[in-house]
Length: 117
Length: 109
Image 1 (spheres, helix red, strand yellow):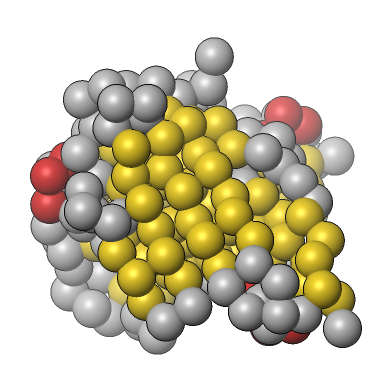
Image 2: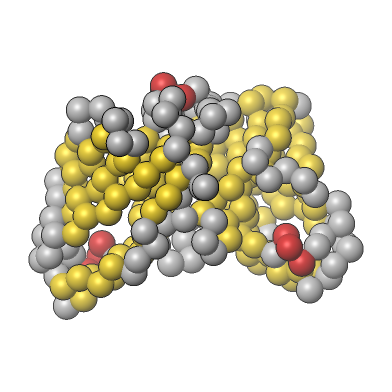
């Protein structure tokens, strides 16, 4: 299994509070991703990173920010959590990135279950 | 319309059965296609990539039909351990990976 951990694994918070989720990898992969998974929607990309301090928005980035100060860590922050951000959050890594023709495989962390009350 | 659509199922089949899932995608320029497997309350894991010529891995066969913009997954001789949700993944217009919502399979004794 790819060396990806996520913390915390479960979190309950209240609307309006800030929340930071952490993804840590030991594979030295350049690309890291944050997804959310909701029933009926599949996984949707929030933000991704293609290197230290290099990040870009995904499909559902509103209300989220990210930071990557080291290769191994990718943080997802909800500045002011809302109930619509209740979800399961998955971090993923890949070696070569999003190039469509590369048949790039993404490896996922175990997920963080976030409940916003 | 979603970029990647799958029949959500559930598909309930007996052990030993053959079962097939289809997935349609809307981006005609897509180049990368995958099937991932996700067990209940676990992370998705790559099952197999899907190549233009089709590919087989043991009991699993994946096919791509570019003209009709769909990919398929065939599972032969189903095992109890095949029970999971199968996610279709296709690269989207921005070259990010777009996931279907998944098809749930339950294999029963």
